Image (cartoon, rainbow, N blue to C red; front, side, top):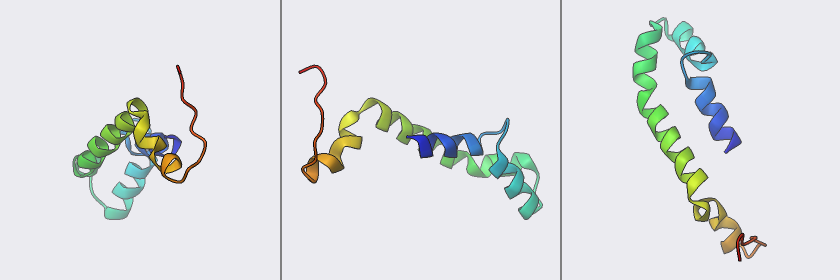
Length: 74
């Protein structure tokens, strides 16, 4: 979750260091870079929401490998 949140933070326009670097390297206006990366924003936000609100997604690998998975509320 932390990596995904940091990735979203680096791509969003107010601070977006990646946007400034991409704009400078590609010598394109910032608006064009933002429009080109819009599908990535959407995918990252949907993935973050899924991981945050459906715990079985993030706990799948520990369950498959037989690790300890705490069950809350039981």
